[in-house]
Image (cartoon, rainbow, N blue to C red; front, side, top):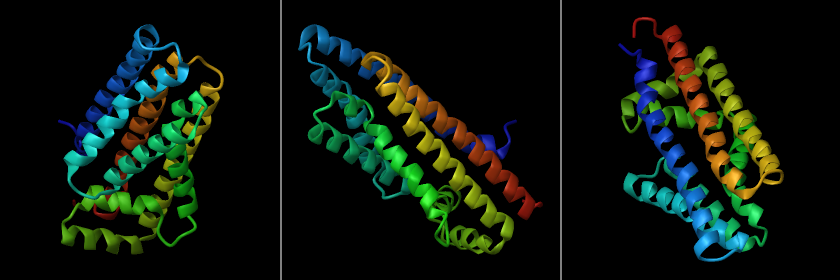
Length: 216
């Protein structure tokens, strides 16, 4: 039987893995089809390649029908894509568009460590307590426990380093490798990094929860 941590993140990891496959294959196929049947233009091919992930993100946001940390991240990702699409004449900026946002989110995580509560505290409350007012009060009250404060700051630090690092790696890939290779590799890079960090975060969070609530 799966432990509670695994049961909590398994559906999310499954959904991310599905998206990873789709975002690695469909944009690459669109790129090559554009080159063959529409235009030899690199910019045109890349513009067509990003249509699927952008439309899918918009659909996922609309389907969610609620404002949550996740939907806010998706919305910001869409805005970043649109800005990169219309303001940049460099085709390579279309390849780095997602990391412009994830890199900014990583930096935001690190900057939030300077504030009373880091950004991942609010993400943790959303995933652990949802809209349940009693659970949210309990979650907020646990901030007074030193080990909980350290845990939130550590989680925020890890997410900040992972996403800022992903931006740096993608930038190197974009300016070093051919576009089709980047289209295939980039979703794998951010997908695997995100899944690994999610798994670590949930398992670490449950270990902290076990420390402060041994009987639960």
